[in-house]
Length: 511
Image 1 (cartoon, helix red, strand yellow):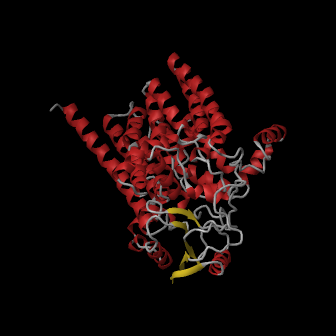
Image 2 (cartoon, helix red, strand yellow):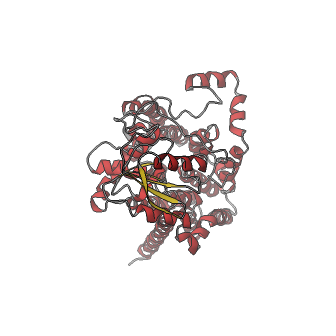
Image 3 (spheres, rainbow, N blue to C red):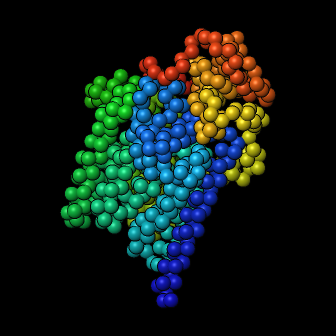
């Protein structure tokens, strides 16, 4: 074996080891959330029902989503978010029909990003001495693998961001390698991952065209311009045509009432008074805090690279939003930005002539420090067991027979999707065979625990009997088919949005 072969073998082993670390950490965090009952029907249960539909060669359907948000019977999850790429996971359900398949899949997809960030770093540090470049590649791979956005996303169960992370990295890496056919394939897959990712593709097209023009790379310029136009058009087509075609309600996800009641009037207002954007992006103060945290945890290095412009559309969606769930860093939204911001940081450091390794070391240390909360939770034995309330909830769920129709607490729902017809218990009774609900702790989608207690009293007075009442979890069985006031037995009506409780979105680190 030559010296070069030995060097490549060492690099390959390091890449595999870092990818294995990424998989192990995110998978362990995801399974910890599952075991402790912290993942919910929103959203793991919804994705599980949807991908299971794909596995049965049907359009993705989720009773949890349909019933709770009152979408019509023909509604498909493609009418919620346009994510047909999730069909790629369907064959896994032929092997193991269980929601945890999605947890494992997400970790594997995250881990697939490790060799990509390493290749991007190698190109960015190509002018550095070989030992320095090798150290930079290892440091960047480690920073990606333990990045707090991936750990946070893993704790929430599963989302389409699982595909967005490696596809974004692959698009950027293939662009640097001038493999433009592969760039276009990645762009198409990103547009099929979530409807707004076409905006990010468009931003990348602008960056690619500008860089290629400076390098006198005509194919790169042509590809960039094509993406600049096609990316936003794909988002407009998905939002304006494909989502309504699949049963989605036009304007359902319009969360920008502070700008206007719809996109047209919001644009008109912004053009006449641009300062309204500043007001919307800075009130409440948790919004600028979000931006400072995202950039500060990377030492503000992303600002030194044009690649950071790719994050602008997705970040603007959040800081201009009226939905307080978009503001904290406790959900999966930051993972969409993670590959972009990290690559921009690496590119900035790669251009520095002096102390770039010191900067990369500081960046890696900062990322690890920011990730300590997730890593601490993983090492805490108490978090591997459900709280007494959730333990009682899961024990009660185990008593529900296979094939039953169920209204279940949000945190119990994903433990029932594989063997029952389950929706989450919410503000409307659905008259199902079993109802599993908590009476001491407020849970989504209720805004006050007294609403849950009132539901229990209502059901007990109209045909339900108590199967188990322990630890705050109440399992009821319908033994009398008498009418229930306010009952809706089938989905339909006007699609409804959830009202966020007043304590949501006020703390950056509490969702």
